[in-house]
Amino acid sequence: MNDEQTALPEPSDSPEPLSLPEAPEHPEASEVPKPPVQRSRAFRIAAAVLPVVLVLGVAGGGIAYSASTADKADKKAPTRSWGDDPRGPGKDPVTRSAEGRHDTDLSKMLLPATGEYRLGPDIGAYGNDAELTAKQAEAMLKAGGKGLSGTRRRDWNERVEKLGAKGQAMRSYANDSGDLVIEVQISRMTDKKAVRNAYTFRTELFKAMEVFEAGPKVEGHRNTANCFLPPKEKKSGLDEMMCTAYEGEFLISFDAYGVQPFPRKIVAALLKKQIDYVKSPGESV
Image (cartoon, rainbow, N blue to C red; front, top):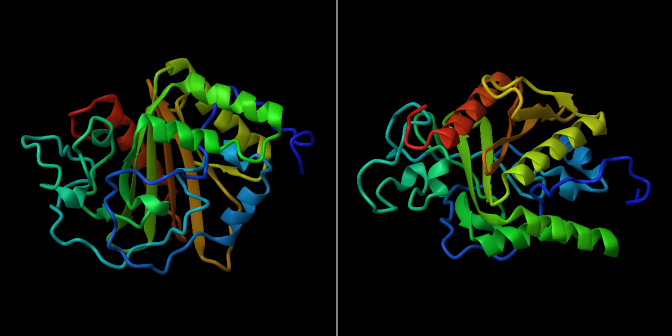
């Protein structure tokens, strides 16, 4: 299938791609070993169906990532409900390192890894808790145009530049029972309208594929968040859910995978917490 054959809509703005550029200067490497839970074949096949997988915008779910659940939990992490605000007194970024970095405005937008959740497996070469500069974020978005023909590639790059990427923060989480992993990416853009258009395009693309099942609605964000599930594979015993959302100038990728029965409603509730956390910085959710 090539660009001319696909019936998918032209992107109104570019979502986050799968390929990654050079690693950031200060990634916090994960010490988590390779765990047993891995992406199911159904998830990979669903992605392969897309000739424009780069615009599917499931980088948060990291189809290209070698992702798996963690075996080791950091027992030093404080026991609190997930989402308690880490933005209290103190400027030392390693003071609460088990929760994830919180030394920049963008990293503070990510939910801290607390309670029954800890930092999860690595996301590509970036570790499990990283931030991209504006230049790196734009390079990553442009890299998503790989495979497009000359004219479309130029159009893609122009759309990326119009987004005005300011940066991107990413973090992975794993629950203590080792059967659920969540990967979150939050991208900050200059153009709020472009963010909304990117969300709309990504959502419509999922629907157009007709192989994804609609996931649960996200309470309080029915018009700004959507989740989808790829075909199930009974043999693997695994399930995934890919979600996309936006809040103001922030585009959010929130993807989860784990063993069956998959806790889709729990994941949707966690996405609500993440959106609310971005919406009201400094408040516990």
